[in-house]
Image (cartoon, rainbow over all chains, first blue to last red; front, side, top):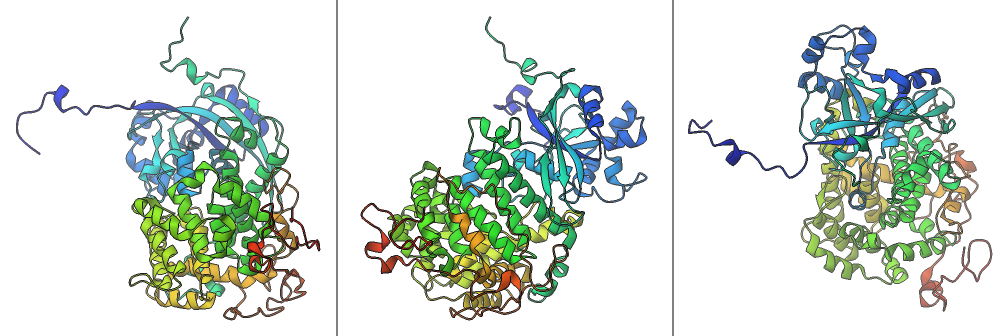
Length: 233
Length: 397
């Protein structure tokens, strides 16, 4: 590192033309819960990380200690493994929540011929990659995403695809996993869809939509209300 | 690891069979759900969400992608069902106005199927529609078109295009990344030029060029294998089999005076040190061997609806295709018999699959554009000839 005089901040600072954070709509696929559970999620409970759900009580200090790049690496790459420092598995102890976001352009499709719509990825989570039978749910929500890694910042979500070894298509950076932290409040969850996976335990199955989407009429906040758009009046 | 063998492919790759089949069934079920919703849009359904925005192309593209992924997973353990799913993917890419659909179909299907009296005449109007669309003018999509025509030169007359002229134009874009491994377009163009000349371009033969693609795919697979949890479950963010490279192998197998077996042998010979790189040509050979078993139900997929789209909301993808000794839960092994070099296929070579009522599961009537005067077109520009229903003078649709 140079020991010369430091540049004044206004000279050395990178000029950023893009905003550093943005609001991203996402989908969360969930199974193993009932329709009543799903209704509780959009009526106040929100979606909580497995760590919170399994230990019941977490503190701000613990949250600070656990929102690290190492924990995020475990969440992305070692989800099914035992946690190296905690009892039980990474899956049950993770302070992160995997979401999927859909954003792919026609240009990308023309170049790659392969897109993964967010609903597809969410349903894959919800069906445990085709191995689950029964009710499952897709929750439609919005989160605030940082364009740069900000793992310790609880309220910013991470675009974790960048951390993967996978570089096959740049498209995945925009259509892949978004990782939330600790909790997604119900006022950021717009609605859920109910599906039933019908079929024998192994073999072909059918994905049956059950009814129309159930909207959050309790406390949903439209993200347009909190962005920096000033309407003329 | 020695060369790939169908008997122990999953073990050799370190893949969990149940998880892999579940992935295949997931993408099939997801595609079916979308297709049902496409035929009867449901308020608030996923299809409605996909197509209600200004970017309506997302719907058909997602559907095509889902069938493609289903085919890729299924091809690992059930090549005949994978063929059905691949055809659906190819047709739906055409619905999405992407020449990539023709590339897939021309690569995966042999001339017996592609030139079937029920197939090409039904496909032709869609191809003409697609090549007139703006998306077809993208260099990458034009490359797929050029590759298909290079493998099957008769397509040039059908489409009114010259593969060589396209290749000449595309040379300006040689550095554009293309395909699953973001390989420079020049690699694809060289492969197309080699097929057109039925030989070698520079120092590289077709098998040697396929080996280069196989090695690129193999490198990605090896990286993906590091995450053992995702890899074993077939959930690694990589295509274990990539339909694009399989189709590329198929195009080479069917081009010029080449035979599938010759291309397969020479490609695998060039990859003795990296069997993982054999996967595309290995899987393509498996599909090539089961093509005679493709039956009428699958051929009916080529019949477009009133809107010219290849809708199929009623028929379910074949689930009864199983190799000998297989069942819905436990597929058997791949057929071991190799197809003879460009010779007639052996009737009943695959035991009880599909009944084995003839050399083919269908009584194929070839549509031969060269036997029908003016390249098989009538004065209205429509294909002449048998429509597959015994009507010898009409269009198939």
